[in-house]
Image (cartoon, rainbow, N blue to C red):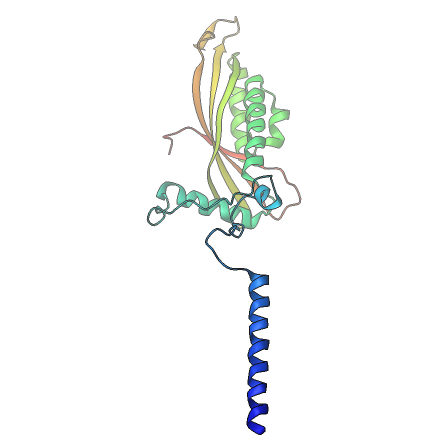
Length: 226
């Protein structure tokens, strides 16, 4: 009697187990190799939100280890990282746009001898140099005519932080016409009919602890200068 009840218990447990297995298979299904893959977490945001395309975007295959960092840009990247840490509002793209605007304003103001416009754009030392050059030009009764035909490129090439001050260097390549005339209007330097490609390397600075968001021009130069 006891053995019979024991056998019935085993049979009931087996039936329950079989029923549970059947339910699990019906819910989870079987893998046949044709199931839709999980969405790739590295696919674009548009694909993740649904763009009407059910295909999964797979990551490209890696062909060996990633290339080593370029020594020519490693220092630049490190310097810009330091600038961003010191000044969280710094954005290279926005900075370049402002630097291009400043480039045009400074070149035009210097040619016209407009020291009032130059004053807020330059550091004290650089303003003194520009003002001195303008005074010399006036004393010699010469007039500088500069026309920027096009700014072909403006690229951040260096960044660094010294104490509280951040420095960012930009290389400008522009097409210009530069002519110097005497008091009678005769050309003493340059050619009014010749457009030249000019490369300028300018460094801007800002006190990162200051509430003033503006950068000032602290240094100008050309490639090859010490």
